[in-house]
Picture (tube, rainbow, N blue to C red):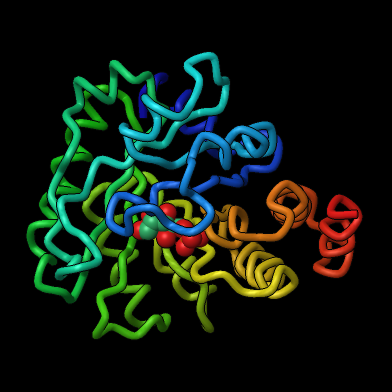
Length: 259
Ligand code: R5P
C-alpha cells in the first residue's frame, strides 16, 4: 500500500483508536428527500465537528457542504436506481477525475450479492478498486441487502468476504448475531451501518455489540440525524466507538447533551 493510500485511510480510521465514526448522509441517492435530510446542509453542519468522515454524494457535497470543511469525505460513486424500482441494478455514477477534483478521502459503492445486479455491482467494485489503487484512494464496499436476502452472518459473511477478495479496502455491513465470524472471515476493516431508526439506547447497544465483536467503527445515518438530539447521539456513539464507553454511560451522555 503506498503512502497516499495509507494517508487517506488514516483520515478515516483514526490512528489513536484504530476506529471510526462515519456520518452517512447519502440516503437521498435512491430515497429522495429522506426524513431528517430535507435540507442536508442544515443537518450536517452541527454534526461535522463530531464526524470522522462524511459519506455522501457529489451533489450534496458540492451544494450543501462548505469547501472549507476539514472533515474527510467518503464519496458515493454508485447509483442509478430509485426506491420505486429494483435497487440492485446500480452502476458507477462518478468518474475518478471528479473524485480527485473533489479532494475526497475515499470512494464507496454498493454491491448486491445474491440479487439481479450481483454481477454488475461486483464488477463495478473491481473497477473502483482499480481506480483506487491507481490514484491512492481507499474503496469502501457497502453490502446492500436485497429484499429476498436475510441479514444473517452466513449471507453477510459471504458478501463481506467477496468484497474483500475483490480488493475493497474496507467493508460496510450490518450487525447480526455471529458478527465475530464475519470479522474473522473478512481480512479488511469492517464498519456497521445503523439501519432503520430505533430508540437511542438500542442504537448505542448495537454499536457497542459491533465494536466488541471486532467492528472498526460505524457508518451511521438515520440513528443519528433522525434522533431528537443528533448532536448528543453522535457524541454518545463516539464514546462507544473511540472511548470504549459502556452503553449506560453513553446513553447518559446523550441525555445530558439533550438536556
Ligand atoms: C445505504 O446504502 C446508505 O449507504 C446509507 O448510508 C447506509 O444505509 C447507512 O445509513 P443508516 O445508518 O441510516 O442505515
